[in-house]
Length: 283
Image (tube, rainbow, N blue to C red):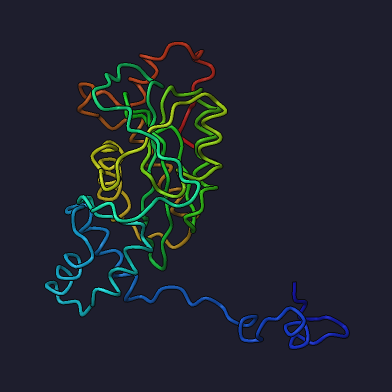
């Protein structure tokens, strides 16, 4: 709303008219320091091994490794990364206004075919000089990755884009399972599923095992791809992820199906879609 080269109004005058301070106009976010980025990488690696570590345990672990950190810093970084430990917490707070509670529908359910159940989750993705967030949508039965998106914020939009792509390319699931994150309880996400007639199920708070297949995918992805590279830009990260996801879907043996890759099993057990409409690669 402020024009630097306005012919009659100075920047200061425009700021006063908008009730803004000049310092707010000139401020540019500095981003996280190199030290904090290094700590976030260490936290992420440790959280894959011990997802039950809360703030205090994670801070103790870092101090034992020689890093001078306090609980306050670790708490802020874990919140920024979207990490939540899996231990059960007392129910001392009410859900946010407008957050409908959806029951967990998968307990005891036999998932026997593609597109019966899909699941979605978000993970933190470290880079050389920053970080991104990655959302993925997976077919529960075959473990095939259906769609994914990268974002530099935790807004719901990039999750909805991934879901829309998955539906357009693979049809509708019967059930969609997620955690209770704000992206998946948002109106944009739930309304898209409800209008399509998809049943919504959500994990209990702190129940990462309810969505264990994507948790395993994150672990495999980070150890086999992310931690082996130091991507500088989002385009580099997208290219690297695209190559690894293509390898995961089409070539990487999966123990669940006798060593067959997920995409092979998906198309073998989902013959409804004509072969000429089957995807050639993971976008």
